Image 1 (spheres, helix red, strand yellow):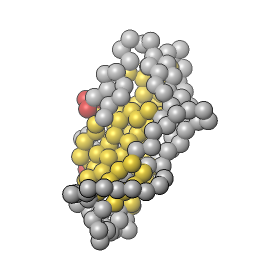
Image 2 (spheres, rainbow, N blue to C red; image 1 turned 90 degrees about the horizontal axis):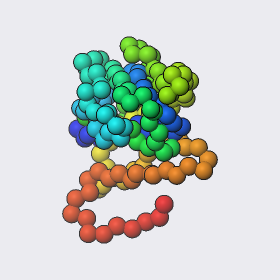
Image 3 (cartoon, rainbow, N blue to C red; image 1 turned 90 degrees about the vertical axis):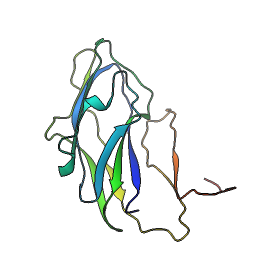
Length: 169
């Protein structure tokens, strides 16, 4: 809802023997306002790997490399990092969160120094109206390969003074 903060996770599949990755992520800065990046899950990945000087225009850049050049492998559906936004748009508005070649070219390189041609799946954020109860539960949309193990996070907003809950998924 307007005024809340959200975290958009970035997941990977097939991340095997990777020595570098870079690119841009774009979003509608009139709907969601960049706040920070967090939850880093690659060796050496930190806030210093992100270019934030254009986030007011809806552009976040990133660049990471494995200094050992041995290559890093992570399990399918590993969350590499999250992008945290403040919701500033109005109910019914949305923002695509898009992997982009501009201004930083999308590139992933493996330890054989081959530039890979991965598939990128963009995200979508929609501003909702406030819920009368003040409580909201929701899950991400995930993609994965057959045979892999995934973790499906379940989130809540307005979870205040709750003494019990139940349901089925």
